[in-house]
Length: 332
Ligand SMILES: Nc1ncnc2c1ncn2[C@@H]1O[C@H](COP(=O)(O)OP(=O)(O)OP(=O)(O)O)[C@@H](O)[C@H]1O
Image (cartoon, rainbow, N blue to C red; front, side, top):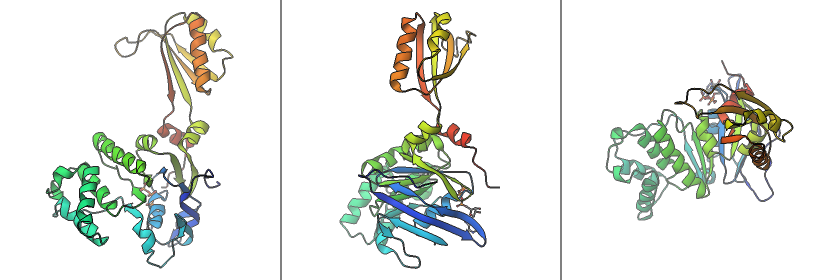
C-alpha cells in the first residue's frame, strides 16, 4: 500500500517510513508507512492485537522502534535521545493511564502544568482554560475518586493538553464510556480540531470515528492495510441505499428504476407491514452508486411517472459495516 498522498497545500504532521517493532521474535508493527496531514483527525482501527497501541506508543516516544523512521512536523525522532522539542508539542493519552485518585482536580492539573514548567499566572490561566474546555470547572475542588468515568476521562484529556500540544495521540479514549460521555468527548475533540490540532485516535467505536475523522487507517496483523480519507473509503467501499416508500403507483416503479443512472439493483417489499413500526406504503430498497444529481433525477422521474412517493431516503453504509466487509484477519 502506498502512503496517503497529501495535497500540495497540506503539510504532514506525522510521517513514518518502514516503521517496525518486534517483541522478542514477534512482529507487533511491520513496515508501516503512515502519513497524517496537519489539522486532520485520523482514526486508527483494527482488531485486537493488530498493533495500534504499539504504533501509537512509538509515535509518542514511549516505545523505541526496532527499525524505521518517524517524523513529526518534519522533525525526526531520534532513538535513545530525549527528543525534548518534539515532546513539547506532543500530547499522549494512553489507554490505561492511572489518575491520582486522592488529589483534587485542580491540584492534579497543577501538578502536570508544573512538570511542563508553566509559571503563574499563565499556569493558573491555562488550568482554568482547560477545565472550561472539558467542562469540569464546577468540579475543580472535587477529589478525583468522586468523579464519574466520563469526567475522569475528560480530566485525563485536560492533563494531556495542558502544555498546548499541536499533535494529540489518543489511544482508545472512549472505551467504557456511555453514549452521553462519548458525545461530550467528541464535542471536545471537535473544538480541539477547530483550534488546529492534529489528532490521532484509535478506537473500536467506529460510529464515533465516522463522526469525527477526516481520515482512517486500518491495521491488520501489524501492517497498515488501508490509509485514506474517510470520503475515499466511503466512495470505494461503501454502498449507498435509497429507501423509497410509495403510497400508490407502484406498478410504474420497475420501469422508472430500469436504466436509471446509479441504480444498481432494487428490491420491492409489497408487504404493507406493521403500520405501528414502519411508515405505511410499499417500501423499495435501491442499491445506488450515482451522484447526488442522479438521485435528484431519480426522484423527479418517479414523481413524473405517477409514483406517489411519501418517503425518499438516501443512506450511506456505515463505517462499521465497511470494516466488517473488509474481512480483516483477527489476531488470535
Ligand atoms: N510489551 C510487549 N511485549 C510483548 N508483546 C507485546 C507487547 N506489547 C504488545 N505486544 C504484542 O504486540 C501485538 C500488538 O499489540 P497492540 O497492543 O499494539 O495491539 P492493539 O491493536 O492495540 O490491540 P487492542 O485493540 O487489543 O488494544 C500483540 O500481539 C501484543 O501481544
